[in-house]
Length: 282
Image 1: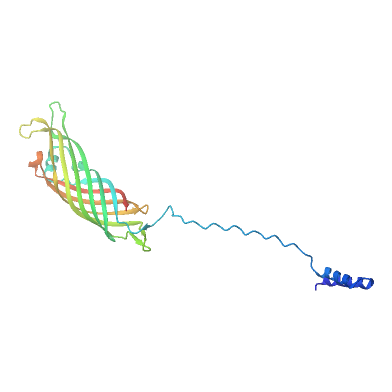
Image 2: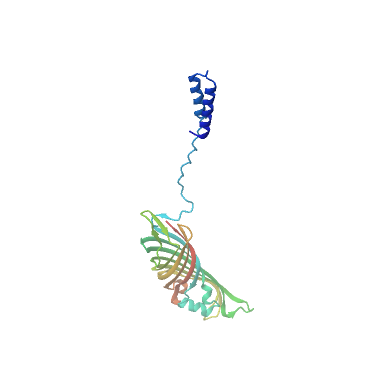
């Protein structure tokens, strides 16, 4: 019993003894009134806070993995071909015209379809196009009025190749049965063989070597021949399915001159091509 409660009870007893007429029931009621704590209303129960919604599963927009290793890739390249200007056709061209070997360097386009054969090995089917145009003058001869004797030479090459690509560094890694993370960079070497079509055309005015007469003509040599190539490159991954690439390859071939250039023996084909492009995996 607390100190305040005891004091109140003693006051009740004093009143009892002072008022003898009080009944026992009244005395008991007074004691209970003092001893019993006052009734208090129960606080209203706070409602349970609403449960937080369950987090939803979302596919990240920046997903950095694939569901399994790629099966292959398609790449497109653009660059420059430093043409292999060897053989009798070019020798006669440089002897008679004001053209120079580097005049035949030109734009080179290429596309490759690579199919994954092993962890670091792809089979590669490729096609390309290289072309150049050279405006020249006949060396040592002019018209009577001193005007140059002009002509234009166009040179086009279309290689079709089948080869292999060996990656020197891993292209990615598996983190589970289904997830595959591509590597940021990958280096490779490659090589192969195939066929190449050439078209060598000269249009304009020329000088007859025997009569020294000036005449207008169109001369052409074209045909197919075999070719081999070696190359190397690097891929820089920008997304899980796209990469920038740099590619260097040397192609070598030689064709028998045909048509109007048949007596000039052969024409060198191929050269060193340096290009950049984009590769998309699938």
